Amino acid sequence: MNTTRELIEAHPFLAGLDPSARQQLAAAGHRINFLAGAPIFAEGGRADRFWLIQDGRVRLDLHLPGTGPAIIETLTSGDVLGWSWLFPPYRWQFGATAVDPTLAVEMDGAAVRRLCDRNPALGYELMQRFMRVVVNRLQATRVRLLDLYGQP
Amino acid sequence: MIPLPYRVVHRHEETADTVTLRLEPVGEALPRWSPGQFTMVYAFGVGEIPVSISGGSGPIIQHTVRAVGAVSRAICSAPVGAVLGLRGPFGQGWPDLPPEGDVVVLAGGIGLAPLRPVILAGLADARRLVVLIGARTPADLLFTGEYDQWRAAGARVLVTVDRATGAWTGHVGVVTTLLSQVPLAVDGTGPPPSGYVCGPEIMMRLGAEALVAAGVPPQRIWVSLERNMRCGIALCGHCQLGPILVCRDGPVVDAGSASRLLQHREL
Image 1 (cartoon, rainbow over the protein chains, first blue to last red):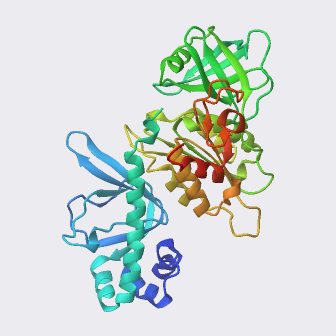
Image 2: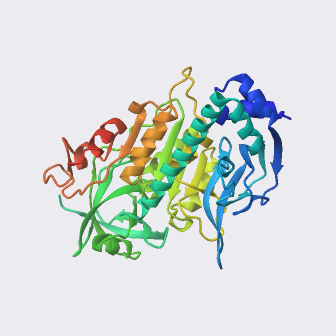
Image 3: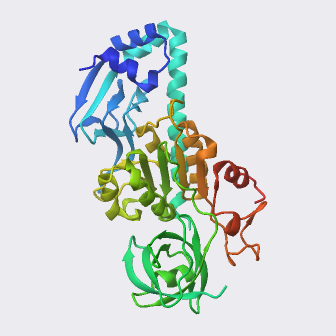
């Protein structure tokens, strides 16, 4: 069984990060398993963590009254789950549910924010990486908005 | 230039608006086709449209048609026993599968139809075949009855939709996001991977970019263009795209050429 440190070192989101920084981050995280169907967080809940998905699948969903949850996106191994912990009001905008048995590293958001405050170089590096994730998902969302497959 | 009569011997409704027709020559058959080529399909009394070949063997040709206009609606509604006219096969098809290296097939929507013969050819050595399929909703997926056969033959088949509906538990997101789940052999020690891409043009552009980012050399990525083909033999000019006539020089072109052409606002 891999340790949290090993899982963090193998995760592509943190690839190339300074080993001491990875060590510090490892101290703010722990490995966690979710059963298939297990809720990870709920829309509107307090966002105080994020997850580095190692294996499995997680769906982001939004509750629609009368029709149940609408699936927004699926995240898989190598993805990062959650960024609402970064900014006030620290509330989840969507819900997340494990689709398959999922292995992840659960990171303590407040601890990582404190780490970034103490080490601005690490904070800048992490912000850049999160921004890349956000931009990639924004671009993917824009492409989906075009409804390409609907065109003849 | 005269269409040859072909009879519908089997029809399968893939989705609410897409039908696969198996066509058998009534008399003379068209010359042998290769994957990626198209024929001009004539609905007598209605009109003629270009349609990619989605399969077939011997004299049998299979077309998968989406009903989006008067002619395609007429073709889609052709019952078993109906006769359609075919001309072709036309154009440059997909290059032969390279003897070595991973093969990634990236298909969006109806774009899976011209790639199906590539997939079937790749199943001969399916250990290195990766098939990534995207569609608008689960109900829009084509050839769903074949995915498990492809997997059983050894291919890695991943499917995603833009919008999950019904009891869908699969992946949700753009088709390019599936690439992260299939690490390709791009360490430089072995033969490089190849990419075969077909779908809406923007998807093909983004798909080709994603393949390059994943390590596929640009010169080993091919896309299938869609233009307003009319004559099929490079005479009428309807399908001109910059310096090429898609009916003759395409529809399959390398991604580098396609990218330059598709980003010209004037084209």
